[in-house]
Image (cartoon, rainbow, N blue to C red; front, side, top):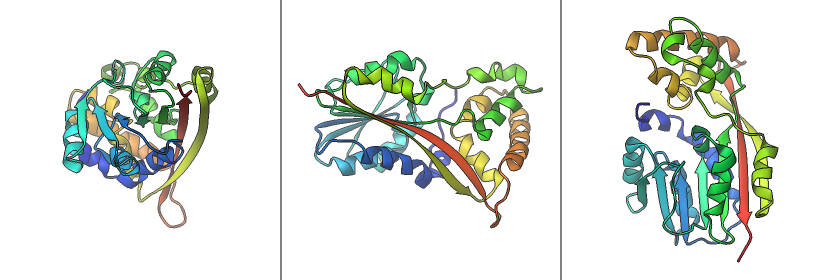
Length: 260
């Protein structure tokens, strides 16, 4: 897959940072020494961690060199490293492993989530937020368009493009037996968007990337986006002020290890 586009991702930074902030607000730590931001992106979530724990050593981890470069420019005093969440192991057990809108790109949650939890220091916290929108019109329409000619052949199995999340009860069960506490909840955000095109722009930097990256030329990508935007305009009609509401469900998990 092509590298991420930090500028496109940051176009909706306020909307993307809101759930990151709300996740952090539920982290039950008064202080921390070692904090890790898994899938740190351009550093917007890392900045929240630096502000919350000013005395901590905060490290951002991401696979994207473009995102890491953007994060280093934003927070020059913070450590950022390239790493793959699926295999990442910290040098020192963190007090907080924080993963905002990142784990949905990594397969095998039934082993991944307990493994990340096991890496924490005693009393440490695993905090996760993931978009839970595979069944929203925005994502059902991606798969529908991808399943039609001329896009079907280069894209392949559209249902396999993104990791299928467990249920919220499933994540609770993965962690509860070994945790001091587990806090799980859903929030459905209603983002006010100026147009159908702006909804497509939002998703071009995230959910649409695997579909677009699989298409071999600009003409196929342009055709895919045009058809997708036409269907988005129908699925998200104009409201009374001419704008559109993008429903965006997100899943939150905050689990704390027992103290030593």
